[in-house]
Image (cartoon, rainbow, N blue to C red; front, side, top):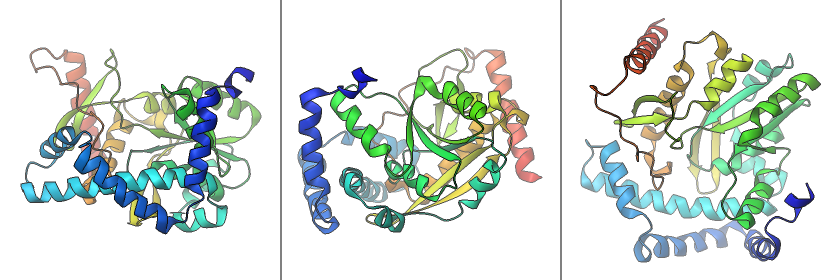
Length: 324
């Protein structure tokens, strides 16, 4: 722990000082700064614009060039808003955070955890996911919310984001310690609400699962599902809407009350369909700068019979569950 406390050193202290000065500014000034950043990022630096254009073109082939260009510009404006809002978290009061990040139906989480069970929360890189840890302000005693994270390459930035994410009664859980955290919660008789950002591109491995997401063959991360099935936990999807600059509303949807009772990959498939609905409704707020579709699916001739049968089985079961 001592080693972790010194992580980042002088670089962190300088970064934290700059971030704190930024966070002390009122939102009207921060959004003016965001407008200036948009000019720098979009027009001058042209940050990942070719990748964003390719992703939008492949995701929405039926939209016109003008429609995709509108989404592109709105995305970059939102990306700059996301940046200033996230740093502002360092100095947001609980009262103001409650006004700006609302959770409409937290009673769903209360119901799923009332007997001491933990619960997994899945979401995507949509709207301002860095404000989701404020869910700790809405949880009853005995429910400890946490967000899974992967350590950043920069020690200074890693320490800064850990500080931001651990505000408002939430904890941060390093990805490799997820199982240990859930076991400890079970042994201590507490409930953990563990959040997963499951839409990032995973490494290719033998248990990979391919599906269609935003009109493209997509390799999905299945770690969240495997953990939920191992512990027999409920899984909930968090749908976030951006109301206006600096204001969001989130709503919970149950994916399954017990993942251990679901066929393999069903939880991942339901999550993917929910996230796809969210993105299609307002695509400007998704993280289009991520190289999500770097990996390409092998041709049908190269696909193993086991993987092919498994994917078809999941899609069939999903259709059956929808019609029930």
